[in-house]
Every structure is written in structure tokens, then in C-alpha cells.
Image (cartoon, rainbow, N blue to C red):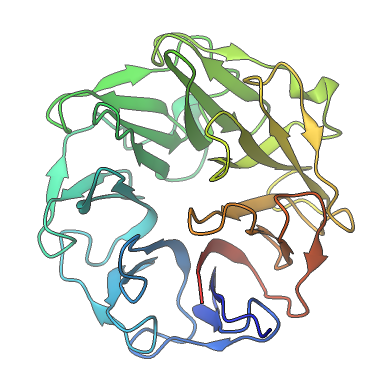
Length: 324
């Protein structure tokens, strides 16, 4: 039976690509956006896969036909780099967006209107790193509506009131260079954060953090992609590598909050750090992952076996897929 799964790959410098055969072949799906734009965020509507939001270096774009056509979604983010997008799983009309320079925005009507959130973000990186801070990840916990955002390089922010007020969370972090965040519930909320030198865990809602010392289990300390499995809410997947972009990478998962790690058997050491993960609750066994330097891999059995997709891209920053 032919695979009709649609896969989207967001690149830096090559816009957005789409496959309609599970990843065997790709073509550009950039009508309405610049064919050489930078894509760092991609969000698919959970109930209507024709609706997608795209974060680019010039703001936010939306498609209502599965990527055939894109139009600018006018917002306060016009002219800004959109680095992260998220949706409230309990209310798909509520969207969150993070940018560079570091700002957070919220929409309650599916992305038609946006309001800025004062998340107490600095204009300069902690420690004086010579780059502009950016919101690399943002998520909303459907259990209580809490919002968490990670900033490169300025730690974690938390709001418990829908974005009206914010707490700055960094105590104990191995680094304030936050790359990814995940939430696990096992009687209480546990946060997992990936950084440039370790994976960190918080069991008190982000007030304090414990570095997990993944260098004892991984050949690399640099970690990037971070997501909870669509098939098991207690399992977190993490992408790692030897730097940004690096020239080696691999994929790991833990089902015990980082006490132990399993290395997933990608067919080869990737050509750079594993940067992006794409799950979909429609089929928890199907997962796509990519290295930042353009390799994309697929599993159809929850990670037991993998294949590398034939096409390689220049630089991949975002992945998503929808069932056929």
C-alpha cells in the first residue's frame, strides 16, 4: 500500500519542503513565501492538517491548504525572526510564539490576532555571549495552562496565569543556554531542559534544576531536540551531537526522567547534531528526526528500526508530519 503521509521540512535558506509519500520524495511548498527564506518553526493544526503556521526570519505565515499557498499572518512579529511556535493542547485556538530578539506572543483566535507577553527577557545574553537572545522553545501544559519558555541564552521563564506574570527560573542549571523543554507528569510535573552542555531536570516546577551528567551515557554533551513521545507520556526523546552544528550526532530516550538512557539505533552517526523531532498522536509509532545539517530519518515502529530518507537538505530547523 502506498504511503500517503505528508512530511514537512523547514530549512534555513531553502524555505519549506513537502513530501506526500512519507518522505521518499520532496518538492518545495513555498508558494507565497520567499524560496530562500529561513524557516525555524512549523506548527500543524491537530484537527485540520490543512492549517499550518510557519515561523520565518520576517515573521509569521499561514497556509489553509496544506502548504500549497502561504500568506503573511499580520502580527506584531512582522519583520522579526520567529524561532518557536506552540499550541495549547486543550484549546487549539490558543497559540504561542517566541522570537529573536527575545519576545513572546499569544493568540486566542487561531493566530488572527496576537498580543505581546511581558516575559521579563533580557536584550543581551547571560554571560555576555556575542549574539542576540532568542526564544528557542515554548510550550503550554494542558493540565493547568502553565506556560514555559526557554531562551538562548537566558534560562527558563514560567507563567501560571496565561502569560500575565512571569517567573525567571535558572537556579542549578548547568547552562542558561536553553535549547529544548519537555514536561512529564508522573504524579507531579517534571521538567526536562536540553542545553549546550547537559540535560537538566526540575522536580519543583522549575524553581531548581539538577544537571543529569549525560556525558556519562552520551559521547557528546551538547543536546538540542527534546520532546515527549506521542506513544508514552513518560518517555522523553533527546537529540545530541558534538556542537552547533557539529559533525556527529545521535538520538536518545529515557523513561525514568534521565536516570538511564537508551541510544536509538539510527542507521549511522548523523552528520551533525540531531536538532528536530516530529511526533503525531495519529500514529505514535511513526517518528521523524533530522540533523541540523540536512539528514532526515524515519521510524515506523516507535524507534526500534530506522531508515534514512533519500533526500538531504542544506540546514533543517523544523519538522512536522500529518497522516495520509
